Length: 315
Image (cartoon, rainbow, N blue to C red):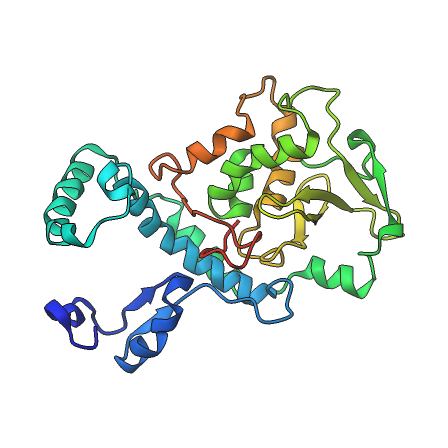
């Protein structure tokens, strides 16, 4: 870019913002020197275990846009030649091969992005939530409710109030995307150690808070999908709505959407257990599913709630 190879700087216009993943972190100085604004997921500082709400929200803004690039890459890599290491001797042929593959994708694939009547509302809500703090996290800290002796396991039918019955649209208004919902089943199956999620005798471990005035908060323990650790997921609710949420995973404090652990809990408690039949989807199929961006309209190849060394932070 410094040499403006093939007039690459002419591709940018005034006020453009380059949406980057963390792999471009060493290029930020060059881009700034060229007067190009950038946006990149936040980095977890030294000795920090998770993002604060604002950093987690900003990262979600980036991944909400950046997934399109990763989705296109996933489509290109369906072609075997592009899914392997390309030898230097083949580099002169790359532009021609890329043009052929792009033409095939454009001709025979569904569009990567399709406008939705809900898009403007989602953008408006995300902007409203960007600077919003996580009120449940603040309450847990202020009232010292994260200590283990104020929680006890409880049967799902004996909650202080019934968990609200939700539609998928209701849940999408919380997640502000579908990626978290795509992962909800696998997390719920692992949490319950069962694939029959509509079984009335299913054991779905939930903890209720025993502190007076905090009976409307529940806690669930989800195992990490990438590390040998457990995250605590907290949800505050009444019989009509989910009020607030917080998780101890890396992006758990975010208020722009939620992580996959929170989504899994809300999806099961408010929706799936009320369905008459279970859509069987063993957790082992999820790896195959996320390879194809046209099957997942909010594709993100990894999750920031799990491991900060991953390029992306989402869930």
